[in-house]
Amino acid sequence: MIADADRVFKALADPSRRQLLDQLHANNGQTLGELCQDLDMTRQAVTKHLALLEAANLVVTIWRGREKLHYLNPVPISEIYERWIGKYERHRVRALYELKKAFEEGPNG
Amino acid sequence: MDKPQFVYVTYISTSPEKLWNALIDPEMTRKYWQHENVSDWKPGSKWEHRSSGKERTLKLVGKVLESSPPRRLVLTWAFPADEGREEKNTRVTFEIEPIGNVVRLTVTHDRFEPGSEMLERISAGWPKVLSSLKSLMEVGRPLPELW
Image (cartoon, rainbow over all chains, first blue to last red; front, side, top):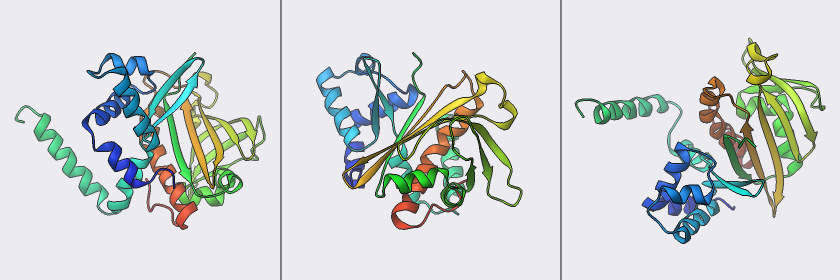
């Protein structure tokens, strides 16, 4: 199988690569140049990280004319989520997450 | 040129023909999507997305823009209330590509208006639908209760 779980976890186990995913999550469909602008990394390093993310199927690319655009592909993450979170737990897990977020982001956080 | 808002990719261990059928057969879509996709799938025809409950509520409508089995299917995608309003019709492209003994399915969703209600709804939906489709094709079991 091409996109196996090992590659996904390995790709996610790096703060720079997670930062790249955060950037695409905020603004999907960016070129390499656009991604480099907001990062404190060399273009070479970004290229290397993107290749690993692509191999894990967490980033997919399409061509728009002469521009190569990078997209966050959350499908492998959805597979991990569904693997360990049962259908009756979903609402409780979500509620706990919302609670934590409210405390941490709220005025008393 | 406008760029798509979303591009989703999943690799599924199946054949292009079976995957194509899984996108257009109401019996199949009911299993992994809990909705039925209904049309004759000819270019220019209408298609409907209905809930698979007793009420069979009409959830989405659109037209078939392109249909090249088993490789490429392009649909417009709108809420029933927005059917006649061109600017509210988004577009979904399914591309099926065999790679070795798996098939790569790419779903591209574009032509959203700024602040589109569809945009909010679908960004949580597609990853679930595609995970469920993959699970059904590979292990014969879709994800339970998607919605």
